[in-house]
Figure (cartoon, rainbow, N blue to C red):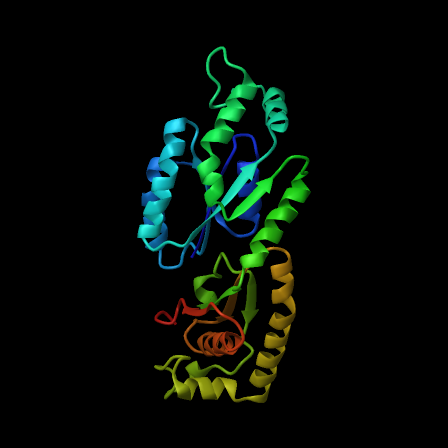
Length: 284
């Protein structure tokens, strides 16, 4: 699981960074109270892969909470969570200008105190967090498009895996709502009508051979693999590193299972993080 913590100066673009990461298929949480950080991490680790890419903006708005951030991060190491920190900053005049434009009070501004002094106090208070950061992004003079490009560039340097899930399903039970690509294999011969094959599934060798050893099945698998070889790098160039492929037949027990299983094995031979799921295998 990728666990990215977005921290940094108030007004430097943390929430905007979270929006960009959400478009990159991260599960994002904005302004998570520091007291909930450990519990949130535990839930993510216990989700059994449901949250593969997580980004959260830590809500550290006072000296006390900033001081508590590093111990909280050390607690994540204790859980065995390999997290990364993205630190957002901008120069003091830029932060001051942004706050004056928004007419919001700075979280560290004291009654009667100046905005500039508040920003400088925050810079000092966050110095230890900045030292721990894996990525530092200075948003001074950056447009939204430039910030997006910068974040994609930084993350692509450490991105090593493209995660693919191949799900077999039955059309009679509905399409997987989160699928990126859907392939209909109802054109292949149906083992359901062969009495000795009906009680088996697409994971059984007899059923898989019946379906996959036909010329049309071989050609389909070759063309599908070729298509995926072409489009997966294009997804990655757009900053996406997960792909959910759904393969459907009537009941989700025979044809789709055999094809999904074979496709997952084929992709796993060239890529990491390929998993197969058989949603309706016990229903069809």
